Image 1 (tube, helix red, strand yellow):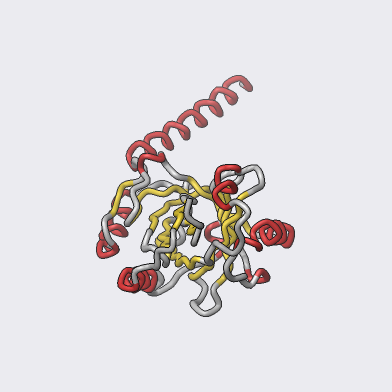
Image 2 (cartoon, rainbow, N blue to C red):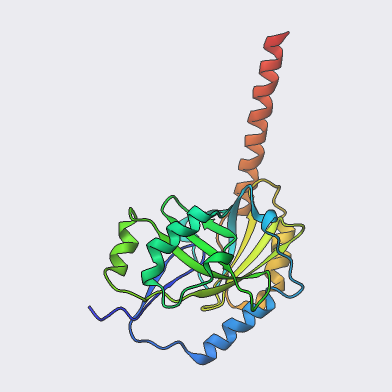
Length: 238
């Protein structure tokens, strides 16, 4: 097997793309940068607005993830211990070290796969540098990394919130892969999802990542079941 030249971790899905001495296409990189510059126009991002609930991916650009099933993620505010764990685990694999003191959020996809989001001071509040974190128990990814050092580049992402923090667009500046997410604790409006997808129709091919109608029905059913349970308990009290 050829020497591992680079490992790029994509936002959210945490797919690992192994590059073997392949230099990025400069023209493609310029297009990806255009996407990253368009997302945060009239930027709106607040750390508090992304906390407290799961987010679900409903659309993607330049990557079809529908076969993986609906993708849910969660954001968590970091603390000194969390940052210390990421640094100790991943430092030897990073090509360049980030500013560890400026990492406000952890993006959590599963028990073993997280991304530390480090603020990018050169680009403003809606830009981050992502540092992947694979726990020691994640044998799949750690076996790909092996004993090699300094193979993971620091990939920049850009994020924007819409409609008072109910929807989010997140784009990977290294490959143009972009995600449209919605909060799981609020009603989903298909018309809003469509308007955001249409607004970014120049990003490349877009793909439905999760069935919007099915999710709405399931959400209503959960509410109905809860209501019935409460009513039954009230009846027993009388």
